Length: 84
Image (cartoon, rainbow, N blue to C red; front, side, top):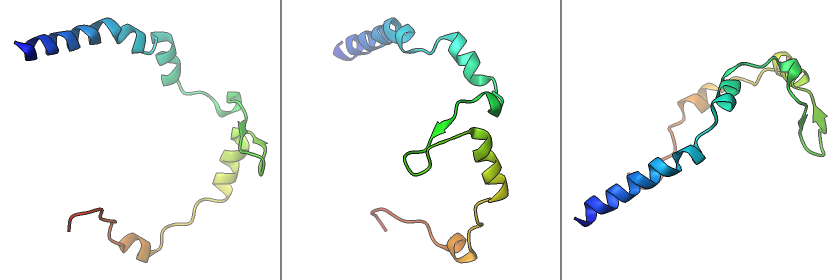
């Protein structure tokens, strides 16, 4: 009897509180629509780099792509936490 009451109470609270936790439909549709990088706000990268536009960041990445992993780094076994 206790488990039934606890489950019913939990599901009832979830049903009542769900509208307060859900993202509004307008916000969700805006988040799913791609934005052009020119319309994005500039990013503050801290005191070392200051404010940088998204266009500049993308251009820097295209001109200076990250170095590929070395064969030794790719062959390295994954870290194991605990156990064998």
